[in-house]
Length: 260
DNA sequence: AGGTATGTTAATTG
DNA sequence: GCAATTAACATACC
Image (cartoon, rainbow, N blue to C red; front, side, top):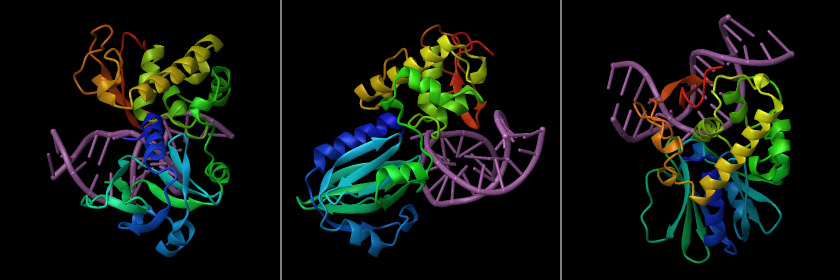
């Protein structure tokens, strides 16, 4: 379930469990998520020490001691975990990395929509993929600038080229907390509202990270824990509305987020 | 059986 | 030119 807060948790776990460890071997158990051949991946990874993790939006770079990196993107169903080598593998374990302390790092993906690949330079990769700045590295004024003027609010917030990190769930959360209807047009917001939205985006992401991205443990007056059909707005009790906005299932409170 | 799911990209339609 | 919609990727769940 990976959006920015989830990937940030993976980054912290990587630093905790794998920093300083040397990669001994890489087993590709499902080649669909790997963009390079097993030989090429092994050539770039074997014997390299993991210096730590760098997160950018929903992308996680495993930084290597030769200055290069391994990129992981988790799609909709990817996870990253650690276990001892005695722990049996799961069917969904697509790429397995053996570390030099007997631990195993596992990239798991049910739907295989993510990707794993070696990259020479993370910044070059991000530029080539047209990924915008990370949502948490910008100040509020800069977020407003990046969002620009065009399109619907929902699509704009999810557009990784403008701002990297928000997905469907946290976009809905930010719009809920900002009191903005997801079908509103960015153009219709005055500067004050845009700044307030930018502030809300930052705050939602920061608080979600403080809760380790665990959506069930997010504050009870947030939208996310109630994101299911038939639920009521946790702030005013009005039944939540749901529909397709920007091509994705969207939840909002018709009272807190008045129609455009 | 059919619709839906946290992501991304390309193609198509308006 | 822009915005919105649809399809595709692959798989489990309701």
